Image (cartoon, rainbow, N blue to C red; front, side):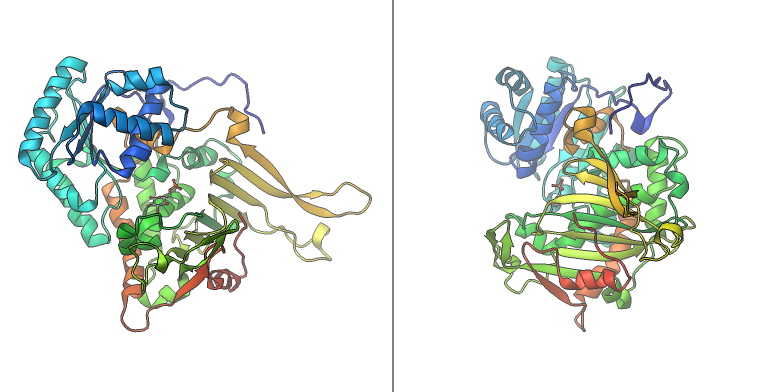
Length: 515
Ligand code: BG6
């Protein structure tokens, strides 16, 4: 499929998602500046934005962390990691100019003096670099550091914007571990920052194809009339990873796949697929519709968890011919760990549009392939005419590939050329890469740009996060139960999860789509 080249006039009144966001000069203070997220994602994303000319040159980055380090040491270290992790090859002249806007601020997170000196430094940067008093605080730290950082920012008066400027905070996941802790965390954040200053990251929302879901649905006339229980049989959402826990056991052991991926990323995708059309493209109009979906999710009470949710944990196996250890043998994992690395759920959105349409959501680590996709399985054609005498024809399936090879395909039936009347499924396929001829930006690029522009559309709002936890909590509760908790199934690394996950769909007369 190729991009249409007719001259479509841009609507000058577009706002929210559809506009080109206009980033403003500001200071970006990254707490946890020497951590993994900063090195792998944040600085490379800022570098790529700068290299593409998307960032105002005055944007200044201040790394805030505990270890003593000079600005130059920080620049050198970040230069090395950016060269390793950047989407585009790093060009020395671009990096050297970008690095001039990188600074390091050494302090403990709970040391008030460090924030006082930060405030002074930011004032100086405003004068020297023209950052206009705008501040973006990025909490790229473990959740137990959120509270002291927020408290100290407030005490140093850094949460308040001066006239004509702004102060915002970006909070990384995990945003709580259950409803109670998410509420507490929201309360802590709101002691210093109002909701419209708060940007909760869900990096899946920054992925190009996730944003394209709304375009597919609401900028085309042919899908929306079919997008309901009359025509759709069921929907599958899969996020598969070949990676294991990758040295993150400290966090993952207490999280597991349900908290790590489903509560946030997968429910966000589900919202985009199922939400009603928003009244406009503003951040709140879109988020209002998303939160209605989470509220309409049929709750799974503890006693129904075993019927509706399958959990699994990878055992020893092999991926692409390479031996892979079992989860319990990974570093820092409890040898008797009950943490799930795979989960498959059957969900229902109790609304008129989606009445009784099952949504099968599956996520797992150490699966044979990495890929995230949504597949919409339409009802079968009636068994008259072509398939009257034979078994039913395959369903039409619309697949939205979130990653890799971002794109959309539609499976349909076609007559095989020849004298006999054989019908075979074929695919109509759109690939971002070939249609637009350029690579999609990384999710963090888009999200950082939006936060500097004041566009919160692709960030999770307080009520979305809390409603999502309210849905997740009873499942976790059932698993944590001392009396006959639902089984934790093993699956060999390199397989598509436990057999129980296949049987689970087979019981419903359906099967997982092969990625
Ligand atoms: C993170 C999870 O939020 O998302 C990780 O904590 C997971 O466990 C990652 O690997 C997947 O993101 P992506 O963008 O690599 O698909």
